[in-house]
Image (cartoon, rainbow, N blue to C red; front, side, top):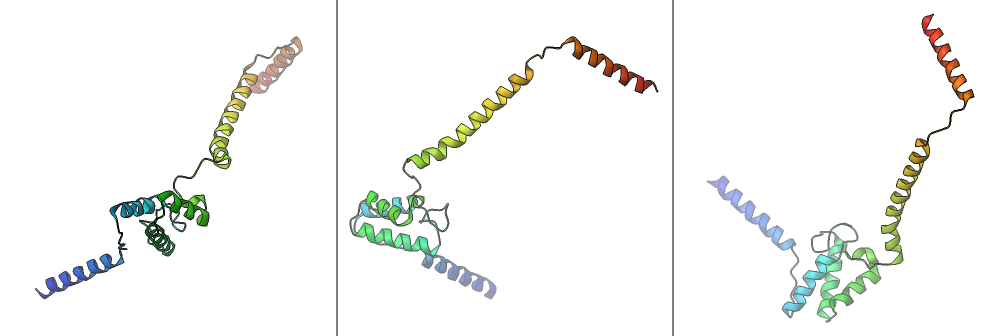
Length: 155
């Protein structure tokens, strides 16, 4: 019986520790709370790289969440908060970076390389598959080589 009570007490203690680690933020309106939630799911943690700041346990993610709370409490719009974070951390911090000449090159260049490579392969195959004209000298050389090979086989 004591073991059961001890296990129950440990489980309760662990659940309280998990609950206390979760950030709780208070907002004056449900709209601001919704904006905060959207922003924390839309902004990427610079340390974790492929995790949003809502799910990240990194210290920098906590700092970003706190800054988002401050900006939302100050009445900043969603886009203003995103612009602030991009100014501080670059386009990487936002999961939906804008289309710029650099991003277009990053998307188009690999496709162009594949198309050029495929064209090169097709060109080489067509060139290699063309019939070559044999002259009578070529026929004589071939007959001579065949005769030499046959003599070596007979020996």
